[in-house]
Image (cartoon, rainbow, N blue to C red; front, side, top):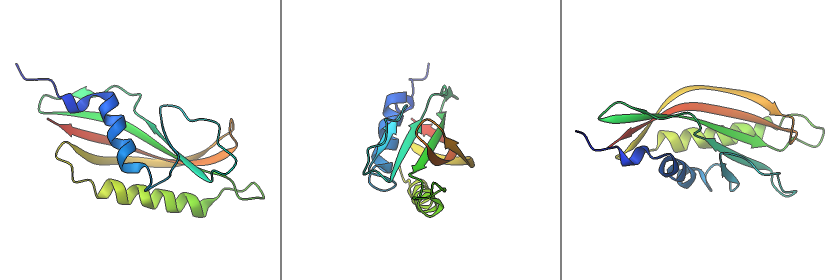
Length: 132
């Protein structure tokens, strides 16, 4: 019987993603849920690994959403310039992964509006391939 893939532990995956995104995409990075933005914050990131991981024997797959939030510009419009910077930084981080246990298969991206905090957000949706 094969040993379990210890790198496919949800908390370990979240911790890994936090460690590679914090300070490179935003200094305000959250896992699972966001907090009410502080007045001085211009952006924040939410890592969502809520979907179950699938075990395929020699590797596992986790589906991950990364939400990129940016405070609207003063007239309330979407801060597209900041969201572009953040998504570019996220792509740079994901493209540069050279970890023996984690690699990325990008699936999709999009945008919407979070009416609870009144901020626009972009999201990137990808599979994280996890090897033993």
